[in-house]
Image (cartoon, rainbow, N blue to C red; front, side):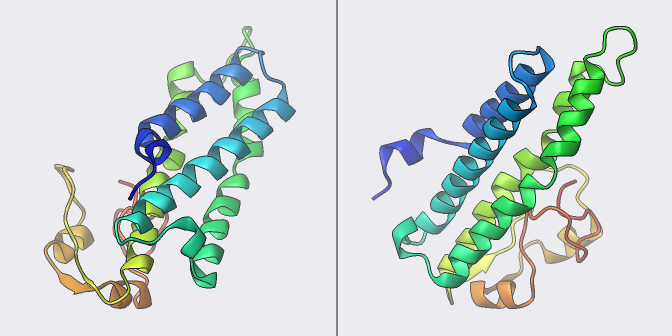
Length: 183
């Protein structure tokens, strides 16, 4: 059974928390340390919930993760941390009223890769928890899917095969997809 906190925490919650950290730094409510703490907490909490949702679809709870699953989750979280400093610098530079480098809308648009990786983490958790269950590659609502996604659409393989080939949907920055997993 899925916990109620899990049900209420979604990609929208994750997006909202990320935006709040950005808004806090942009408006000067948070200093850079507060921004770091907010972003790290949000990323850790959000991606853990994404993993929990994905694995939970196959009856696997967080306290039942294999060592490989725990490592994959921690790797995903740590990967996100490396981008915080550069993003903070862009936000701070952009709030300079005499010569802003980016308008707030562009600052918020830079959150899209983080938001997209929520689903990527959920997808990886789903595939790892599924083991040898069959999974079908389903093209999303994107009107202009890339050649790779179109070629994979409808393919059914065991989850272990998808993982062994390193092919997972909604995983940011992957070389095997023409869209790199985020377009």
